Length: 172
Image (cartoon, rainbow, N blue to C red; front, side, top):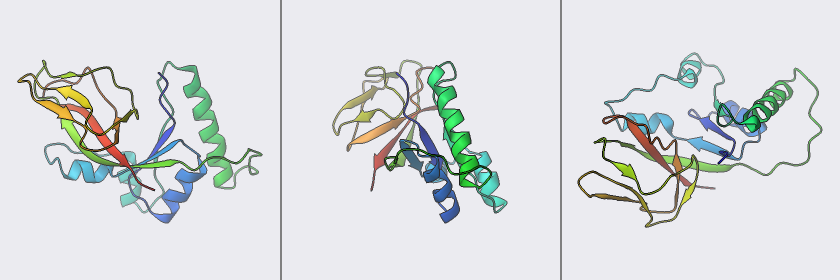
């Protein structure tokens, strides 16, 4: 299943938001740094963080699975829109684009045991309704969606102690 186009806006400055919006992704994802601050056993040194600390514009684009032909198309569009946004090429002649959905990360779940498993196969940015079973721990504990949300980077291959998945909620 192809993932929707998305951009992580770790530091939502006016400039970063303008740039991210100009790329016209389907989703803007916020609060990666906050999620990691709440999980001190993990650190996240991203290029976005480096750019932010250097006073530069910095966002992270996701174009899709590496082997998906659509990821090449997404990357090319992002590059064209980047060049147009910064004035390196003329504005693109595109039809009006729908505003991106804005989702805010609410937490990270770690895989505690190799026997922890997802309730079903989840896909990046798939909608999960409130109350839905997301995963089961090896001891039988159920991980349920406490509210309508989207799953981010579900990793079937996560090792015990590693990042397993993230959840986010939509806000206007």
